Image (tube, rainbow, N blue to C red; front, side, top):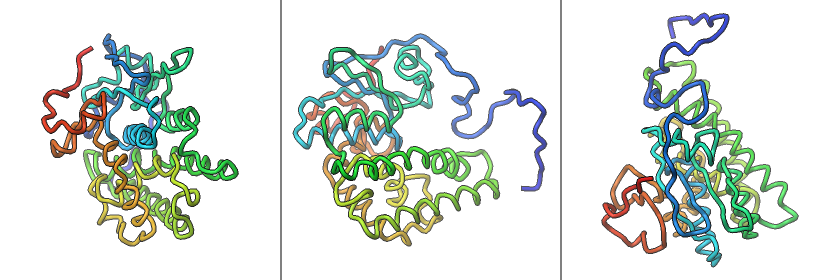
Length: 289
């Protein structure tokens, strides 16, 4: 960079930040418009988009159902963040932070809201006693789950923003966040050199959370950055990512609430397992309400 920015004494939101998501970024919270959320018939109502954070939860639901937990049936509604759906009053009531995914759980005596993808994973895992790994290894598994939650801002908000979405390519932030992203890949590669899965020999919610970000990255599905980051050098991460990618529940989960790419890869709404057999997605356009 050639220009030097001198920060003002008090920062003020005077101009949009620029870039692909400038129209939805703002320094205040709360709803911008009134809009109720659609509701389906299942105990779990998910409002999301198939970004890495959204994919975590839909993969989790599909894994639960594949494991025989019939009580995990869910309705998934598309929240188009590019259009500002996350600022509708109904969505803000479920997640005051206006980020996807958000979940309403009416499976118990009292309906509860759950937001933040890691919290939703843990909520579902504890409810169904599934994908938690051995009890004696719980602290290790949770450490990796929270590692992912802490690392995502560096990968998505840092590297992804400056490499893929910023209005200009600035050398310093790209170098800074590329270095951190590669360090994180190295952390994973060293861990997976000695373990089949992230926290040991069992597939857990830590794998689901981390795969949705770093698996997508090394498989070439995130930011078009696989070659730039030399992901082929992280052989253990690639082995793990490909193994998880081959799971049928993962394949289904990554299609839910997807609104881009090949039509065969999109399931904008999900209300039953039969929806995956529907080849024409026109009947599954997002519901109004």
